[in-house]
Amino acid sequence: MEPVTLITGGSSGIGAATARALLKQGHRVAVTGRDADKLAAFAASAEAEAGAEAESESETDSGNRLLTINGDAADPTDVAATVRQVLDTWGRLDTVIANAGFSLPGTLEDHDPDAMRAMVLTNVLGPALLVRETLPHLRESKGRIVVVGSVAGIRYTPGNLYSVTKWAVHALVENVRLLVAKDRVGVTLVAPGVVDTPFWDERGGSPQAAPTLTAEQIAAAILFAVNQPEGVDVNQLVVRPTGQLG
Ligand SMILES: NC(=O)c1ccc[n+]([C@@H]2O[C@H](COP(=O)([O-])OP(=O)(O)OC[C@H]3O[C@@H](n4cnc5c(N)ncnc54)[C@H](OP(=O)(O)O)[C@@H]3O)[C@@H](O)[C@H]2O)c1
Image (cartoon, rainbow, N blue to C red; front, side, top):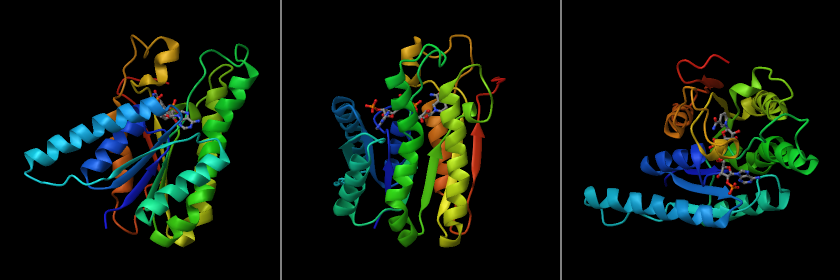
């Protein structure tokens, strides 16, 4: 049976590009997101793409390999229900990609406290809940965990609470690796520099003069980790666009 991958925050950007790439290589993929319309739009375009490809390869059945699940990565009940749905649908779990996250524009002086809470819970509690809920199944499959951190998690920026959440995520990844290494579960941190995705929408689009990566380029880094042979565990990938200084 094809490997099963669960991606949080897969309706746009890096998560969506990773889902498309994994579908292309034959995975069964479940993606989550809070906005049901965005998820439906992603599913429609991914399925159209898969259908066109199957036709060009003269296959008759592109298979039902994409599952979209509406839920909040920071909500324990949603995370448990998501994992249950994936297992009920496909009976196994091989890879989880903790990708859902966002950044508030401005500094912590400008932030609304409720928005601060939502960002900390999504970016930090979210990956921890996902790991907690999926570990028993990954131990069984000897699977892999990939967590999307950020270059913001290895450098300091004035008043940047998002950066604090990513420093925490980076610590989580290494602490999880130490927890599960003996179980032969792989753990990888992928820390992107600036990537041109809807992540930047609230800041008026990606930085004009700055070099950027595409979501597909980060997806390729994630697939590099996921596709390692048994016995090989890539632990950290920091990927910047050439020319990014910070
Ligand atoms: N773009 C960059 O320059 C950059 C750089 C370094 C790291 N990253 C990291 O890369 C990851 C993906 O970001 P992206 O650039 O691909 O941004 P994006 O296009 O905005 O994608 C974020 C995805 O996460 C979902 N999401 C956000 N909060 C969620 C929650 N609480 N529960 C479930 N889903 C949630 C969004 O859908 P809904 O809003 O519908 O929930 C969307 O599908 C994030 O962790 C981000 O911190 C991005």
